[in-house]
Amino acid sequence: MSNSSSKIHVRHLSKVFGESPERALDMLAAGVDKEKIFRATGSVLAVADVSFDVGQGEVFVVMGLSGSGKSTLVRCINRLIEPTAGQLLVDDQDVLEADRESLRQIRLTKISMVFQHFALFPHRTVAENVEFGLKVRGTAPEERRERALSALDLVGLRAWEDVAPDNLSGGMQQRVGLARALAVDPEVLLMDEPFSALDPLIRRDMQKELLELQRRLGMTIVFITHDLHEALTIGDHIAIMKDGSFVQVGSPEEIVASPAASYVAAFTQDVDRGRVITARRVMQPAETLDESEIGTARERLGRTDRGVLFVVDGAGRPVGLLLARGDDDAAIRRDFPRAAPDAKLAELFEACARELPVAVVDEDGRLAGVVHSSDVLAELARESRVVEPADDLQAAESKPPEPEPAALEAFHG
Image 1 (tube, rainbow, N blue to C red):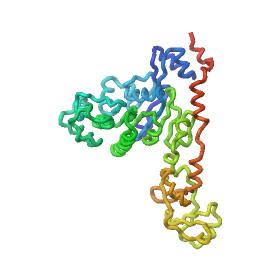
Image 2 (cartoon, rainbow, N blue to C red; image 1 turned 90 degrees about the horizontal axis):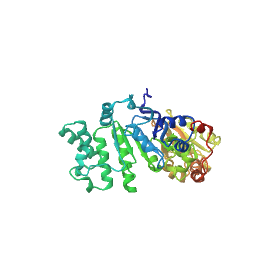
Image 3 (cartoon, rainbow, N blue to C red; image 1 turned 60 degrees about the vertical axis):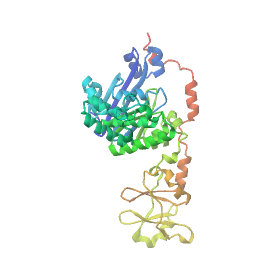
Image 4 (cartoon, rainbow, N blue to C red; image 1 turned 45 degrees about the horizontal axis):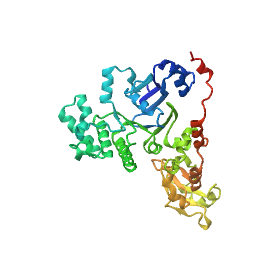
């Protein structure tokens, strides 16, 4: 059974292309890498023993270079590609054990997919394209037209319902593809590099629209991309994939701030950390003074590490700021900056420029910590690389094959 909070539950999923899948999986279990398995068996290990969970309403992004296995993986979820081994549950329904009719119903009612190259029917109108999944499902014509138009409303294309898709721009065509997927009211939306063919500005707009739709509809999304900035923009969690395996899975902040391997660090080295790292990561415990004890402010300030005290009310909400600065060291400021724990560091730059500490407050307005400008600067300047990533990638591409291990020799002959 899957974790009760998981919409998608995947364990030890593998896909082998070739005539020796069992032998390839045995070699994988013995620790043989993808390249050596191919040389020994002629089989390609596209997905190699991958396990992960996707929560209800989560955007889970799988990112990697071409050939990493990400598109094969997403097609295994709805069995457009048949996995070789593993377990795959949507809710608690075993997709890999589903018979032909059950799988058809899963694809019609539970899982929709948006492709990179739109896959629209040129001989059908925009509305007819959007209706297609509903028509296959057997929905009555009046109902499917109504639902198609509602989906077109969601993506802002209602006025184009009777136009042929060839008359639309690339971004508009992708919106039609998205509307077609939404029309069947899916619980899970699979998206295989859906925006990669779009111009940068249109791509950014589509990312924003997707997030807004996801917030409104509560869909669970598995999104495939080779673009880290796209992954960081839309992902609740990101999986970095290489050679069919996950190198690291984490939140955008974890991926950027704490790369688990040089391969991940190579992707993240040019990321604007200020737009990813949050106040929660750099905040420090705040030194506080109850507003009923304001008469002791001067004495308390003298004992603080940074000359900063927040005055709090009885519920722990900050109501003032005391700074040890010259003769005004006991004067209360009421106009101090505040931020939520999830605020990005870039949002704190103005306060940092004024050298004011930022009160980090929770959703109930209580003081959770304090961010100082020096902590922000230190985090932005911090090296997050595991090794020199550019050198590491070049070395990986150019180094000669290593001698075959004993584990490989066991499979020869």
